[in-house]
Amino acid sequence: MSPRPLDRDQVLAALDAVRDPKSGQGLAAAGLVQGLVVVGDRVGFALEVSPREAAAYAPVRDAAEAALKALPGVTRVSVVLTAEAVQKPARRTVILSPQAAEQNRPKAPVPTDRPAHVRRVLAVASGKGGVGKSTVAANLAAALAARGLSVGVLDADVYGPSMPTMLGVTGKPEFVDGAMEPHLAHGLKIMSMGLLAGADDAMVWRGPMASQAITQMLTQTRWGTETQPLDVLVVDLPPGTGDVQLTLIQKTPLDGAVIVSTPQEVALADARRAHTLFQKVKVPTLGLIENMSGPVFGSGGAKAEAERLGVPFLGDLPLDAGLREAGDAGRPLVSADPDGEVARRFAVVAARVADVLGV
Ligand SMILES: Nc1ncnc2c1ncn2[C@@H]1O[C@H](COP(=O)(O)OP(=O)(O)OP(=O)(O)O)[C@@H](O)[C@H]1O
Picture 1 (cartoon, rainbow, N blue to C red):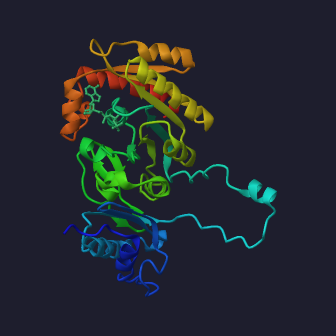
Picture 2: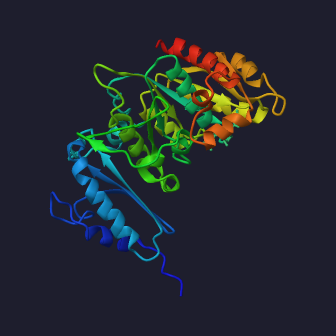
Picture 3: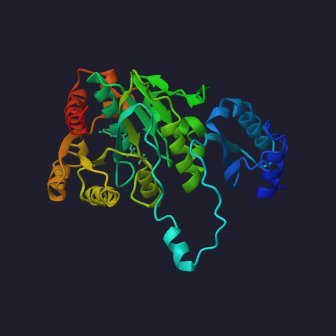
């Protein structure tokens, strides 16, 4: 007999068997379970606590994970400890007229506070998947670091966080004094959805939960200090131009965006849509980058498209097996082969990006 499909009540009951140390109630009853997702054999939710208590709740998160894994039919569990930094507004008690209620309805997500001690936040975007956005983000970050800048990478790709693999980092980030410590590798500070939830599990995340986790990674990670601020935080956005991307770029305080495209016409149309999306939220497109340029896919398309859009062209990067192999091996090619042709091309892009960002 196959196991019964999971139901939410069963999941909530299991979570209520885990005590909230503060209130003494079960986790669900205490209102700590946010954004519960139950899909097939997967369960995910955010455990919402105040930043001061985040470290104390790490064992509670582990207990919740263990309780869910013990349920028959559950194979994947992701519990994310999110420290809610912003005070929630008091509940409204006034009854508004329909017109007044409409005026009061939030029109767009409220931008998150700027991350502390971070000078510039740069988004790396693409209008469609598979154009090499993450590869470019990782190597661009390494090329910026090679200029002597202090650089962080925030992997916000909810659909497939690839930075842990590409940069060779594993393990949940540690909470120290109420903030998460980023992983350090290749001279970069790294935080990823994949580290918070496990690369495969992030797929079950949708809307609010993903957005909450990204806000947390942005504002609750110790990116820099007062005396040693981070110069640039490179944010690897999820590919595409849908609602999830729109919400993320509305919520994230971005100083500018670069758009990665392949030379092909279809990818360029998507790059155009990405540019329109950034225009909508008044984030400057710093320029287009052509990836996988060369005899196979052609070249020059992104440069022509940049001219049409009236945005700078930042440079082209070749289709190069070494780039893929280095990424698979957990080391950006710019760090693995700093004197090679690919590193030289990334250095050109990084110089232009640093220039427009003023770092
Ligand atoms: N210039 C390049 N030359 C060779 N291989 C590349 C190049 N750029 C990216 N790749 C390879 O293409 C694949 C997709 O790249 P990557 O994951 O960076 O794309 P992406 O646009 O971030 O994808 P997704 O949309 O899925 O997040 C990877 O295997 C990567 O190693």
